[in-house]
Image (cartoon, rainbow, N blue to C red):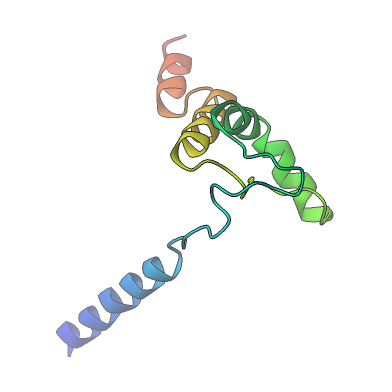
Length: 100
């Protein structure tokens, strides 16, 4: 009975993780209404301001957390790099803080 319960729990966890996986972006590499596509530098900026943008996006429909009209991998790389810079480098930033 325990093996069946464990197998059911593992299956449930796998299904929950699969449900959280992002899908494809159908407007990637297509321009926004102004005719622009966000690239690396825009992604870097959006990542850096992402904590503030996230809070604002909760209260308004005009502000989005992530630019869907982007050029793909380079925008994503800039976004993650910018968010990491804001968060002081993540894990590496916390190691430096402990040494002080």
